[in-house]
Amino acid sequence: MLLLLNKPHGVICQFSKHDKHPSLAEYIKTPNVYPAGRLDTDSEGLLILTDDGLLQNTISHPLHKKPKTYLVQVEGSPSDGACGHLRKGVMLDDEITLPAEVTIVDEPEWLWPRTPAIRHRLNVPTHWLQITLTEGRNRQVRRMTAAVGLPTLRLIRTHIGQYSLWVNDELLNNGQFVTIDATPAPPSLTRRSTPDELKARYAKKRPVKPAAAHPKKGSDKPARANAESPLSADPRLMNDRQLYSPGRKTGKPSKPGKPRK
Image 1 (cartoon, rainbow, N blue to C red):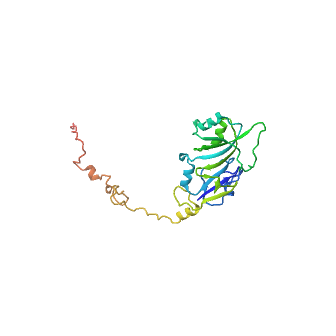
Image 2 (tube, helix red, strand yellow; image 1 turned 45 degrees about the vertical axis):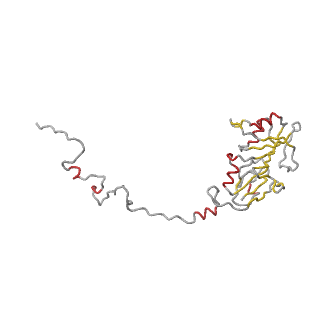
Image 3 (spheres, rainbow, N blue to C red; image 1 turned 120 degrees about the vertical axis):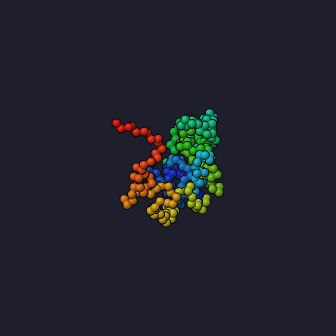
């Protein structure tokens, strides 16, 4: 299965209940699907959900370098130098980000109102940037714009690879989801097993093999001596006759004894 959700601002990217924020469970009622990648609680826009572990990994893992496009409202006026710095890469955590596509755009006409609304400062202008990344570090877009002196006020993800907020040329409303593929993924080791699958898997208990009473044939481990058998029955031990028999070869030359006085 594959679903697309236009995640609202303030919704945490998990299905379990949260004390402070609404979760995905309030918007998605389809069972056994999970987000392919994350979207910050204070960010909005496209979120992909699937029950296919392989697809989930393909979409979210940085090694696949799936392009992700964001509309970013920043505080201040982006200069050519700041945009050029974002395109080439900025230093985050002692590592330069990969090159990005950065374009100054007008405020979108299709933009929905955000709750709560953005607080504007009268003396500080705001602008919109379209940024496309091929990696996904923690809060990367916000940290990149802050590094060039352009704090992010609002962030909306519009595209992930071939998927976007527009389905059949119609924009998904904020909080709306659409099912792209309703076919459940086959069970596999790469997908989380559902509770029903776990019950079916462990319904039949494996038979327990009884412990062997005797050593297996061909085993070189000798039988252990017990109270009913003499010590000489254990081939690891030497009986008295072997130990004290005259003429026993020890592998060492005998020393001549001292003559008695």
